[in-house]
Length: 490
Image: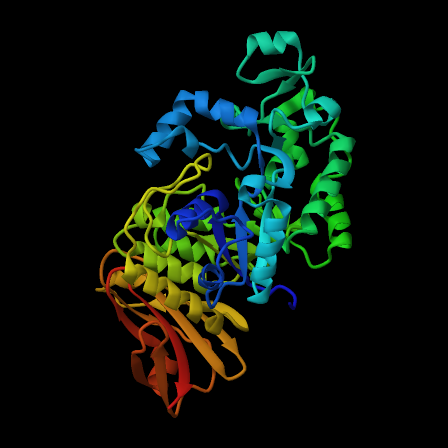
């Protein structure tokens, strides 16, 4: 397989519930090593460059006990899965006991078989790494206590939810600076040199089994954020940042390994500079799901190099399902945007079919939900079309209108240009009809006719080149409507 594309399309699969669904579908146990070839064909659809098998590592019995005893978690489980049974609660994939593929999912041999099936289809494999915390029964809590934030008996007595005892030591429960502790994990100390060495070794080990690694909550271990979270408990701030020397050594071992940072709090640029290939674009997600066209436009004026290092999404396992949270056509307009902008694109298993229930990661079974065939067809078409669009030079376009018709303010447009190929994406990012003119960036339009073909529905529009050059492309779009256009001389 050749190297990674510059703007990969990634498909996230929650491994445990996915395999449980296949087990029901085929009436026999299905693990990573026994997934039928026809299923890998479905997963490796045209336009997919990589599959992220989320949650393959060995889960923690101690973390599972916490999940089954926690009233708040149990309430969330029953909301997602009303017919919940004890067997449905399998523990969090981010409460890792060992970085070894869980035997219940097929073990290391099953993962190797899955990777080989993907490789045969030209698709890369992405796995997880969690730098901030591990399971409370991870062997290191006993063997390497200095890798963890440590406290005192007094700290445990004062805050029993924030500390726990392991082999005679008081260790911190994992958390970020803005929320209560996560009750099922132990907090690693990102300032400890031994922990940093162990991180290199673990990431290098993971890199032998996949083509890319998604690093959970990567910003939590940057020096400023970690010091702000843990203060004197962490010890002196190291002179070196956490990620740059680690990434340099891991990439020396695996030059083609792509590293993806789950990033929040506007830390994307920091993490890009520290060596990550792609960082979550949570800010764009918020704009697409909660804000309007002007907000989207402001986001897209960022430097192209920065945008190329972002991972765009409208759904993942941490966010509500798009079909439920972004209804009424807005979900499709947002999907067109993330599929045709610079940067990487992330889709989530079940998103194409219109699943509406966000499954807590602790659960190993999806609820039964009817698929939306028309929505699936839309996404499959978009997935196939996007690689034909995202090539060459990208440019955000100006959209203008008329004094008595402000609807043009809801229209956002951008272009791609490579050689003679010209592509245009125009989106009405508003809940009312909109008319606008998009100023085209190309010289030489005048004096001939142009044929514009919408790749999503096949419609063809004939336009006069003089009008396109002087006034721009006129569009009249329904609420949340869009065009994905190629433009050729007639």
